[in-house]
Length: 549
Image (cartoon, rainbow, N blue to C red):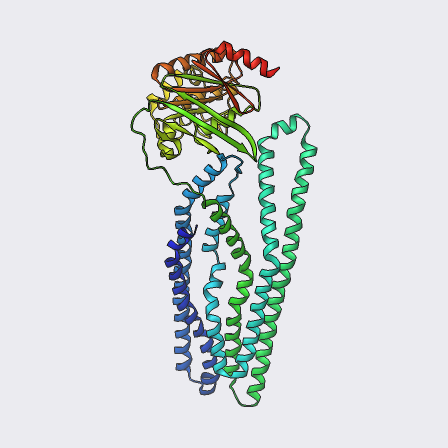
């Protein structure tokens, strides 16, 4: 993330530059009060009063204009930072979600919003104004050394209080944020499985688990609020006490005829202005701490960003093969020395009992997971060397659990990209979904809602098959493609496999359906991550029966 922040340092420097003039102009009112008491009140000159007042009002108008410009500048910085960094963060989040054991969450974008809000919020003004504290204290010191010493003592105590606030709340704030993230993930999982929860009477148990998560959040939030409130209240008390002491010292010096009343009033106001950024710093520390934690998480997220391979896809490769692939999840071996070679137009069925590693194999074939050993090659190129965006356009995939996006049927078939109506219809016809789609309320323009909630499982599976066929892919990977299909749907799927064979696509499908496996040219039987390669579907079927028993 550092590379993105560095780009905006000049813009933040401009914000600090505006703060320079704003702080200078704020001195105008303080000096105005001194001249008002020491000059105007004594000379009783109306002309002097008029011009002094006109000058301070003009200074305030300019200061207000500069503050508006500074605020707009920082808002633009936040928006531009989001525009530049959001796409890489989103891409990395998606890559991280499909990685083996990767968390599926949206925390990256939330962290990005935290940094953007810090740039755009009032908290950053405290950091722009804090360097002016020594200057204000120096001015008070010029009025009288004793006044400067009292004001400096108050500033030091306030600064120490801010540091103590960071020490005593930093770790607790980090723990609270982590607890909140865990609670958000738990709630997201609960909402996704709401139907199962209610259907199987899991709500009481789920409520107890949520209460446990929520109790942790409330505990940290309560302790954090108590500590923060203590330090903020203490800071206000110290500032007010320092102001009273400065006024008292000033009155004492007036009695001794060492300063004037105007100097006393001006010194008190300048001292308040000097301590104000430090007080604001304490209030803004929460925003800074949250932004710093967000920056650390984003840096960790972006640290392993993989660069796109330099190799494009120019022509249909002559083979698709997996070479001695082994993979483990949480140190548990899932695949061991899996090896096969597939030519264009060939169909490979992968069968095996549950837990044999079939879905893991599919994710490695697609390049979603990187194997611990071995590689997957398209032609002579390692899959990891190919531009993933170009590769994705030549791959069709149906996952085991089909999910559609919020939008129309046509948009889902077109993979949310630039629509080609003819290609959409061709893919739907090939998938045997065309007539079904025409029977929907608005045909291809029917909005299907988040996750396709208006569609049955079989309808979603057919649209997912059409999406996989869109663009005439070179490689098809189908994970249990018939799990939600009726008999006409399975017949249509067999026709799709035959069409893919004619077009020269390399097709791999995972199934428990032995009848569907007979359509394949070869069958690969997985058992406990190991391969028993068979030449015919019948022999593979008999081996599968023995393994199951």
